[in-house]
Length: 595
Image (tube, rainbow, N blue to C red):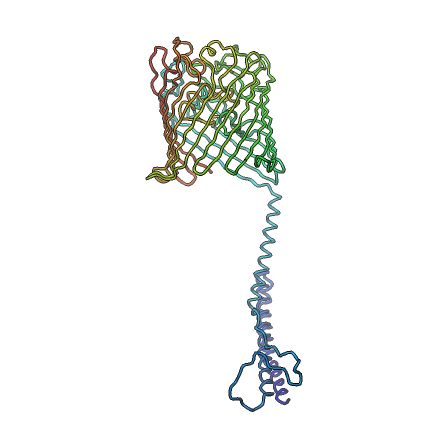
């Protein structure tokens, strides 16, 4: 007992000696850092951490002294008799007089030291604060309008040769020339919750010449033929929730695009997801379209050249109604059936729709009977290395009050990805087939009976093409009420590959015919010779076309491209003197910067 009391006295004396030292040091730190602790939250935190460390040191010293006390007390109670062999006991046995007593359990392993525990608490606190700050920022961002800006600029150099096919009656001042043209797009998007609004400015998209649907130019440098270039391509507001509602000028595509309807239209569109159905995932779309495309007059739009200054700003009183269903039976298969109906509220004397493409107000005048109906289905899918898409359309309704429509069109394409063969990387081989119905030679001459030439409703210059010359310049089709498949049948072989890395190459070879026989020299539709060709011999030979396109990166976000087309005309374009027309060619060098 005396030793125990002496030990307690030693501990008390030690604490008495050391505690003032620690307290004095803590007081000194407190006095030295008190002013610094008031400078900011970070200094205050450091000051508290230092105090915590001092307290931890005191606690550690106290525990150490207490442990030493236990060891000393245990040694004093032991008998002085030494055993032959020292043995470590995990737990000492119970006393003899208490044989049912629980054994004394040794001290368990100590847990994480105080410094590690403190650091862990700090990390957890920091994480909670960070998560709270991120959540607060996300909540604040949800109350703000998010803006997005993007755009692109395209510059081209065009070189053309003999695009009039030796026919002076179809000549245009740029058929044999070299010139620069450009196109600029700038898009501003705003998003707030379920609401979205988009403004897309497009300079050069609707600049074109008088030739039948010729893409002509974008926005030519220096002298150019233009229609007061349409600046606003898209301007709409959209709500996205249980359904999608979109109102304003918007880019709309029917089917796989480029055949019936593609391009900017003023419309009101609703889309609703039907979810999982017996035929797979499905959604339905209903849209009202204010159709554009008529002309007030042709005072500044006549042969041999001119511009379409009277095209814009015309209320056509044409209403389009679109109903379509997007179905997805499997992950890699999409089927889209649709119906597009046009209702004509016009009358005699209203804007001329130029349905006969003769630029004459007195032939097929507006009578309120242009009410076509397109019933179609589009399919696209992929199976392994093979991808495919197709469009099948039936056109009925009326062209005028006295003439009905009865036409159809089919466009199919399949591509097989060969991956790599020899030095050719990303090799893909494809075939494309297209057929559009047409009027016979006799029906073209008489202008009576059902109209069998297939037409689309509205197609901008970004429509689907099958070559660089015929379907883009010679028979590109007008924007309104026309198609590059009118009385045209073609088959095209396509190859895509990279002979060297990043140089994307596309080569195609096409053979074209008229679907119905026409008189030689008269063109596939209309009157290419304007009456100077009097041959009564018939033909279906439109000609051959070969196209080569290259695409390559120049710099980050800057892409270069080259397009080459060579068209060999057939008897459809035979001259009035009976001789064949010379080939036509076109070369385009360009670059596009996207941002």
